[in-house]
Image (tube, rainbow, N blue to C red; front, top):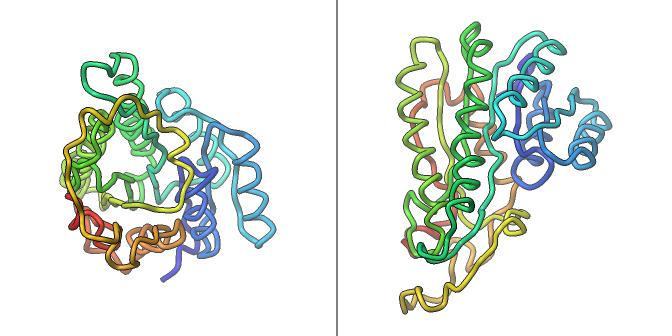
Length: 260
């Protein structure tokens, strides 16, 4: 398995799963467009890739802004001449609150970044992917797909469920262009996404449920790592997964089977 000669776009590449995947792609021979909103973080990722002998370009943009994604893809393809892989990973947890306290603006922000941003990212990349075929992987979540016990996470869960539907619809539509589209559903992973979570007044809405000891059965409660998720993304983008498309894969150590 190698990505030698491939060009990959990774959104949310400044930290966590995106960063780990950008580094993994580069180690496997891909040229990487590392996209994020924080210039310092993205530059650090690019510099690390280059120190390891890889090739990367820093792309600064907001996935919820269509023009930002058009510009990012243009810069990436002008630099490397093609685009073969898209990892649509960027997203936020947003505000978790009871429905009657969640404001329309808070709902719209989560939908704008998580769902619209996925669409804008892939839409911008499609003209280039159609030229050669390629692979798309979308980061969804256990929430909204196999787990519904996180009270207040309604906006987030709805966007994550919609990403799975998006992947299945687009996988069928794009199969004739030799473009594979899959979606990953991580559980608890050691990342900084919780930093983008605001939780309000959830105690009164939570159902009194007792789960068996150990939130993640496979690891006795220890969260997974970004590198483990990066390995799954790499597999799905490699030739070893050449007959896999329209498929969701949970990577959660059986967490969602216990807490669904």
